[in-house]
Image (cartoon, rainbow, N blue to C red; front, side, top):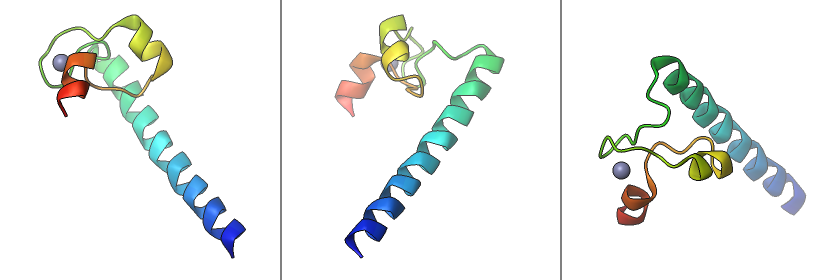
Length: 64
Ligand SMILES: [Zn+2]
């Protein structure tokens, strides 16, 4: 049972990531991929490289 629950948790995580990556792809097409959703400022390349699905800059993420 424990393994089953872990697998389901992993599956849910993977599905969430797929959704987030799909949204990231849409943002690339819209040309706003590197723009913070909250403040409109730039998201650093390093941050996007580490966390490609992030939609806010570090300052906004820290404020959440
Ligand atoms: Zn921001």
